[in-house]
Length: 334
Ligand code: APR
Image 1 (cartoon, helix red, strand yellow):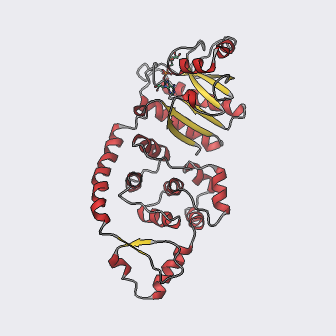
Image 2 (cartoon, rainbow, N blue to C red):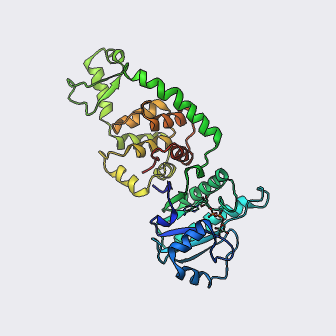
Image 3 (tube, rainbow, N blue to C red):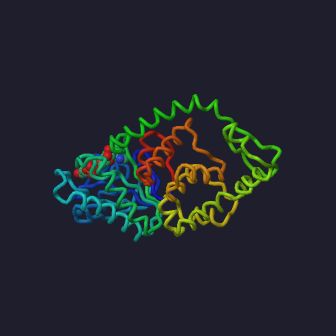
């Protein structure tokens, strides 16, 4: 997945490059800086002393030493002074310059802390917004696995308003479906050999078919594989493949696997990522997910959150992943 968010101690994360939230001297400090210097060992400080410091918004690179990475990229975030001192531009530049360095040194994966959101007091939700926008802009033009490593869950500060709205939607729908679940039935049309999977329908709906042919016609449609349906929907919307897999936060190599294997069975979080990238409505979403054998059920919290975003037409994978992360759910993408 090109961009993901995890909760961990960044000194434990394996990546080609780990980014350090340093200060202008590059001679170590507290927080992430202190943790990385402790984990990397004294050799790191020795090399840092040769770098002559670093300006705010810029980045410099050293070896990884005892850390589980080839390189450590030191960048200096802005101290938050209320937002009127170019803080956003400087913070964006930290990510931009670090990613550029990682690319120059041939890194395929890089892990960031939430720069400036600790000692430098940058409000966490705004710091995350700047980070995702800089990373998103880079990934629009480049292939790399980028991980945002947050130290504690409340560091992923999705806006309170969005969190409350999603929580209310879960409370309303999640509970309701549990009663509704027993009303719905799943039918296996075992007298229709063409059917490759269950199709869960309302009992009355199932009996509305007025002929065997109608039902088979439905199954002809069901014969279209996930891959075929996906490519059809991309063409119908005049998107390019790259536009869709980038927006879906899907790795290019995975997309070419799906494109070349007509029977490819994606993971649910991958199939959902394409639903979001194609900006499907709830019926189109069900149609595409069913081709991969999935549905969106209100008895699964992940599904309920996805339905919230589809029904509110919010097709931003990064925002959805930050929300899923805040609710301890799996992220969408590969
Ligand atoms: N792994 C991942 N994230 C961490 C870790 C860790 N081991 N330790 C702290 N964090 C998180 C903090 O919770 C915060 O969200 O990293 C984010 C950045 O916090 P700081 O490390 O305080 O960095 P910053 O706010 O950029 O301030 C930089 O602090 O440590 C000094 O020398 C450093 O002067 C510089 C200043």
